[in-house]
Amino acid sequence: MDKPQEQTQAMRIAKYLARAGIASRREIERYIAAGRIRVDGVTLTTPAFLVSGDEDIRVDGERVGPPPAPRLWRYHKPAGLVTSHRDEKERATVFDTLPDTMPRVISVGRLDLNSEGLLLLTNDGTLARTLELPQTGWTRRYRARAWGRVTQKRLDHLQKGVMIDGRRSGPITATLESTKGDNTWIDVRLREGKNREVRRALETLELKVNRLIRLSYGPFILGSLKRGAVEEVRPKQLKEQLGGLLDAPAKRRRK
Image 1 (cartoon, rainbow, N blue to C red):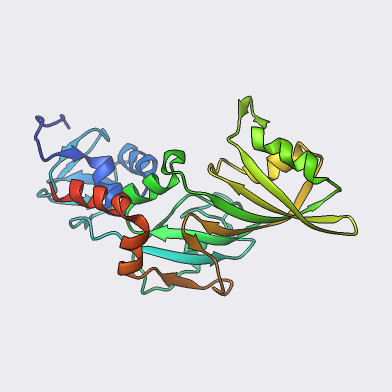
Image 2 (cartoon, one colour):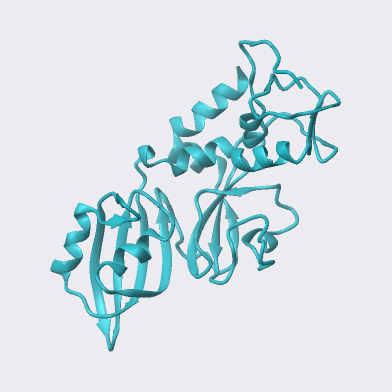
């Protein structure tokens, strides 16, 4: 299918469907490659195809309506769940545990299989991507229990960042909380959330993390939310906490 002419109100199909909460842009690209997306009856072959939202857009035969207003949920992820909609090893996923009454959501970042704590979920792909970016400046806070001994002086070296896979991480603030036997509890704060970054950063100090709990993500905290529970952030609080981060995607959506 050929790419249509440029329109002032148009956006790429991958971005449009991500905002509609169908999937991430990367997943949409895979959908297109598999021939699962049709616009006005024609199967797409490129994620660069432009749409205005007035077309008949279908994913797996189901029509996609205009992107809804952004919503956000706090979820207390238990250890042992994969943060993915599909898992090639057929392990249980976060999304398998959500109430049937919830719309389709995607996660803001991820927590690995053995990590637990706060995971933000949203129905808006563009909002998810915005909240993940380091430029947003949000601090992620964790409590890590690690096997091994360490001093605060050694932990302070993490503030300069550490080399992981050939790249230097951003500053990591780590505070020694307590030590019992061979286990140490450490409060960890960082503004980036690369794959297993907390675990791998502490490994550079010869510490092996055996429990990792995310306590907060920006202004949103785990608090007393029970393990496995999910709770929507009230619209008023969402607007107060996100401000322009929430308004920008909405304005682009109304253009």
